Length: 404
Ligand SMILES: *[C@@H]1O[C@H](CO)[C@@H](O)[C@H](O)[C@H]1NC(C)=O
Ligand SMILES: *[C@@H]1O[C@H](CO)[C@@H](O)[C@H](O)[C@H]1NC(C)=O
Ligand SMILES: *[C@@H]1O[C@H](CO)[C@@H](O)[C@H](O)[C@H]1NC(C)=O
Ligand SMILES: *[C@@H]1O[C@H](CO)[C@@H](O)[C@H](O)[C@H]1NC(C)=O
Ligand SMILES: *[C@@H]1O[C@H](CO)[C@@H](O)[C@H](O)[C@H]1NC(C)=O
Image 1 (spheres, rainbow, N blue to C red):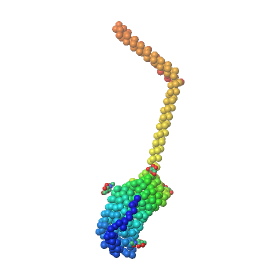
Image 2 (image 1 turned 120 degrees about the vertical axis):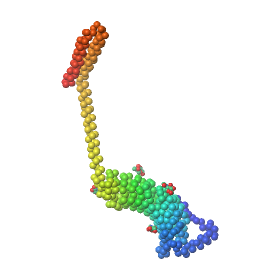
Image 3 (image 1 turned 60 degrees about the vertical axis):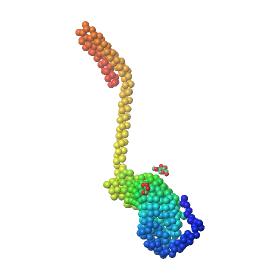
Image 4 (image 1 turned 90 degrees about the vertical axis):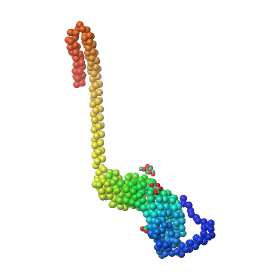
């Protein structure tokens, strides 16, 4: 993806060429840039807090270690490091760098270590890390990314840079809250990944996919309350990794149980397992996660008790249902046995009702006849007595039938 930069010398006007050659010889002759320190024997150049606003031009060409720190250099342009082909270590910490331009380091063809700590990278060009042959082995960006946009810029630049030799990546103290899935997959040979002092709260499904050769993963001083089952399985996929997990605010509740037992039995080596402590609840603060037992977490006392109650409730409901069903069946059976009696009782009741109705009708007729006023009272009493007799018979009969 990286464009190969070839400057065609022969197309340059002759005067420029002569000037360039003069300049090159002048640079070689110049021992050291102003306000910098150079060691000829060690081939190191150091420009610390030298008030520089750009990369000095007159850097000895045989330098292998170049350190330009504590200055105020806002941008790194494409040609910033031309003619420094032997630099292997470049330290650009604390320069307030905001922008990495396209091919900023591409003339440093033996660059192995690039330190960009404590800058304020707002813009990273997708081709910023393109160096022919991808020699870079270490990239350090501690406390250097301005915001999440810078992180996505960085991911693009890592992919475009094809950094197949990168072994170490430092991304500590960058306020990282979320790592995009598979963000490290362009770095197939990554061995050491430093993510401490961020605000990461979880490890997800494919956070570390593509970097299964990781040897060290530092997640100390983040915001993890626990590692979920998903996160644990993700870590299990890196069989040789040594994990660092201390100084996270672990919540020691039942949700942590899986993590605690994983710590106890995991194949994955947790380098600082003895120094993982609970931060919550207050009663368990400063208790070591390794020393925690399932009983201390209180996970198996209450749920089991609840389960038992639940189970007894369930069985008692079933029992009640069975009893009610049985009573219903007995009732229906008794009704069936007494079907003749019931039928008789029904017809008796019907007749009794009819008698009563007839007697009322009769009384009404008498009442409506003024001549029979006197007789009516005696007659009514006799009628009600007659009405009671038939209804009393079947009731007694049913009782005797049921008891039979
Ligand atoms: C860079 O290193 C090589 C090999 O060590 C050496 O031959 C060459 O002269 C060096 N270049 C400069 C400009 O010193
Ligand atoms: C880079 O420079 C800074 C500031 O001078 C220094 O503290 C740090 O140790 C250097 N890093 C490396 C890897 O040399
Ligand atoms: C990051 O900062 C830049 C410059 O300040 C701004 O343009 C951009 O919107 C910011 N991105 C986020 C995600 O806040
Ligand atoms: C994890 O990723 C795989 C595919 O890589 C997917 O099948 C699975 O559902 C994911 N699991 C979760 C919990 O997201
Ligand atoms: C850890 O493992 C040991 C034995 O290997 C066992 O006795 C102990 O109960 C385990 N602790 C937890 C929290 O699982």
